[in-house]
Amino acid sequence: MKARVLIRPKEGILDPQGQTVERALPALGFEGVSDVRIGRLVELEVPDIAEVEAMCEKLLANPLVEDYEVVAVE
Amino acid sequence: MTRFGVIRFPGSCDEVDALQACSHFGHAELLWHRDRDLKGVDAVVVPGGFSYGDYLRPGALARFSPVMEAVAEYAAEGGPVLGICNGFQVLCEAGLLPGALLGNDHMRFRCRQVDVIVENTDTAFTRACERGNSLSIPGKHTTGRYFAPPELLDQLESEGQVVFRYAPGQNPNGSLNDIAGVCNEAGNVVGLMPHPEHAVNPLCSSADGGKLFESATYQGAWPPGNQADSPLGSVA
Image (cartoon, rainbow over the protein chains, first blue to last red):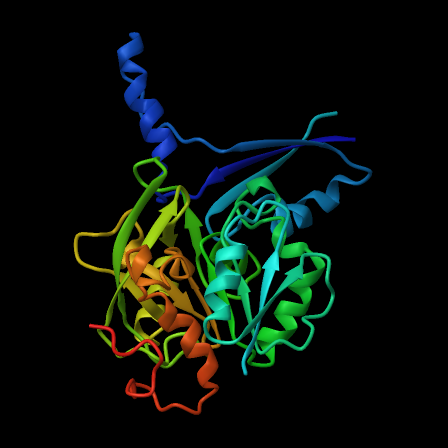
């Protein structure tokens, strides 16, 4: 089964990558964009999607500073 | 004579300087990331660099290497462990130190000499210092912004676990409360972003970093603050 893990900086944590991209967008003519946050996407083929949360806790994310969301793709 | 062990991971790059720094104060040898024992060393240094290519997050993969299991056991027994830069990140990822290191607030790699104030001298790597000492050592990193959630941050401040702070106006990365280094509750595990191993010779800008390695030789024998016997002398 294919799983997709979305990892984001936790709410309230400064995300300088997101800020930089947010500042760059108006220069390209895209006005009015706010709250840009940049995280990571991990795709994996797993025998049991129930295990993915443990993988996130242990390795894929740092739960102190990141939130994660596991999505079953198929 | 104190025996230092310096870990080499694939992607480490400051382990040789750390080895040389340690050898000023004792015997120093390399430990390999696949080693399962620490060869009886008296102190462990987890050096700077880019262990496992910094893949996923700095330190995220190195913490699962065989040698880190041995380091975790050693730390739990009270053994002195020092993490420098990437080593600090590894120890945080491993849960041996509190908090996390995030990307610098300005998104750039910054390499410069910084003044670091010693806030706690009751740790395995600051016994040779006096509270308030200013150490001039280089910092060089992209992912050095120290972060801890508010409750944890309060605890670190009240329990004296903030060991090093950037001097006022010199915070190079946006670290909370200007934190440059922290320790665990027992004070035997210490981590910091700046590089004391690059500052052990006055010809290379400063010898202040030597204080950390010297501290590890005390093993409680030298009373904190007694610098008269120190091979490096007193730090201003």
